[in-house]
Image 1 (cartoon, rainbow, N blue to C red):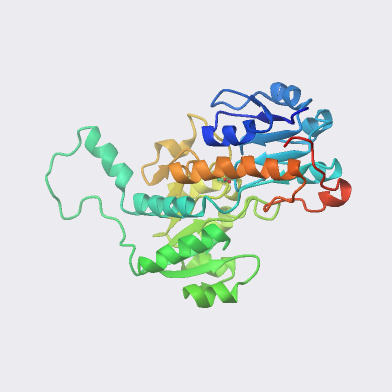
Image 2 (image 1 turned 120 degrees about the vertical axis):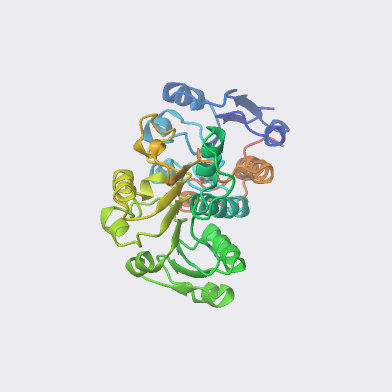
Length: 336
Ligand code: DGY
């Protein structure tokens, strides 16, 4: 019996590989680095399915050569790295894993917020380089209290909501902006809607948790940063391109805002000469908001299960391009 062939573009959790190996032949790109584009393209030429990560770009060039491909499953919530239109036109099912990392990412958003406001990373650097000479000083390393302050959340999806409910537990006032107003969530969590310009003006902390779409690219630029309070902090756990990074550097240098904590960047990994690296009022982490043992295991397993659903002829729960069913109706690939 011919088993479906699956390409996995990185070392991922064993439990997910085992799920796939039960009924499919798996070719693993056995590395923590992404496969070069030519290898990715070549490897997908004879595959039925691909399990990929957010740092793999799946564009027309990939689809053109991948004539057998039925499903692309990304082990991420974000899917801005996949050309959905091209996939649909070619009858390729595309899935993501939207829900299992919600808690991990929301927790990390708050970790960043606390770190930058209460200067945790800056203080750690200070101590390690031997600069701690005075045991305790009344004016040393001050930062704002978080309790009682206003948090503005941009993008009220699952992660935005999870940040909001945690912030309420911290005694923060929470306002939000999203494309569509969500009166039920407002009532449930005790939060209020603001147009973006008002949210920027009113917030002490802003958490960006919006998806990257053509409308959100560069959403936070010079004009937006200028309208924030000079005492405010920006936290980005969405995608780097939502913020105009040059404008952010300018805002930090000129004191338009007090600080920023960023898990995502316009270019990842960032260049060693990125000016953000030398700034004290900035906390930088390497795109790791979902990096808990629990979230990453669930993420890998769900990504594997999404592939198996499509190959079994079942609609996966998180199909990103449902129109594909008209182009290429679901059918069982013989495997079980
Ligand atoms: C995602 O899955 O899109 C996140 O950015 C991972 O941290």
